[in-house]
Length: 165
Image (cartoon, helix red, strand yellow):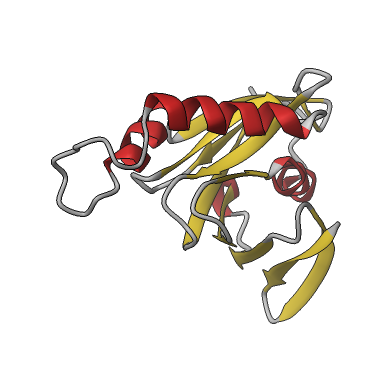
């Protein structure tokens, strides 16, 4: 396990992270339960488990029941929920996407990253998870993944927590 760094006002807080991914919290205001994180990807294509980041945001918000929306504002990256117990699942997903949408396939987009746009569109730019009793209502094997398809880059993740009625 590597370390993730969250910037919290004027101090830096270290928390356990997955795969040594660098994550920095760049806004720490719970005004409307909005949070913004900056994530530095290290590979051209990778899935980064951000479940712990979302759990921490929910814990800090104090919301016991409601929902959390994770949004990725990029056209060559996305977010998805899938199995986080076996890393081969992520490998298999990336493998299948690369077979279906190879990097060089005669695409017309001048930047040469159409495969990344297609993969990001299939994954989606947001996901919603219920919050029940202060915890994410995920299945036993489910995790939330940031999906990079055109890295390495510095990306943003927005988290919005909505208190239930």
